[in-house]
Length: 101
Image (cartoon, rainbow, N blue to C red; front, side, top):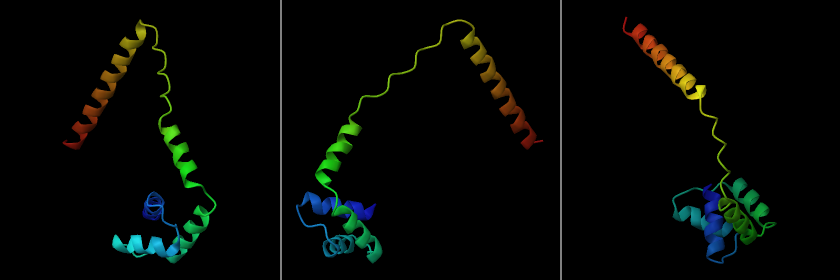
């Protein structure tokens, strides 16, 4: 991720995203750059319009939340859920009792 952050920082500063610039940013952060990763990332980013990707990402983040599922009809369901909860609690307590003898 640090390589992506370096690329985004360069993009925000309207600087070219190349290996030398990214090395400088990573070095300033105390990170030794991996040449292979730098070459791969700069090659991949040369084919991408970063502004378009950022716009897409922000529109995905702003998408409305999915509607909540319909609530089940009232009746026996809550009582059954309470019984299963009580059983689970009893089983958990029984398991703890086995630990202490």
